[in-house]
Length: 186
Image (cartoon, rainbow, N blue to C red; front, side, top):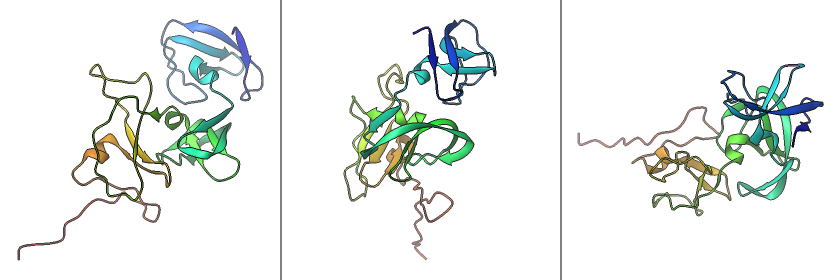
């Protein structure tokens, strides 16, 4: 593929091999453009990672199995991901039937092909380990392992999931909640 037409901007992007670091950001994922395949437009200056440019327009994802997600372009910092809660700019996937939004980082998460640490989480549904493909340490353990309940979108990263008392993000409280033992010997 020597060129593509992407919905944002609605004109042709030329494929090229970036050989030096550009310090530009990909307009879709907002991550730095490193050497490798990119799609580029000079007017305006616009870079897209090769992998981002080839993302599907529509996606069925295990984090939102009941509906199809569609790729859309948003203004910087205008949305937060329904999975991780992070605010983001650039491109994402959304459900036209509900308010579910999936950023590109979470869209890249797939059910773990390797077994994550055994977890005994006090949660009413099964929790599945997900990892980013091609993002493993030399030992084979995923760097970005996340544990998620697909029924209620409850999720924990590896640090919180394996902590003695994990932090929990609550929709009814602005800060993360931590375990606190209020018993004393006095």
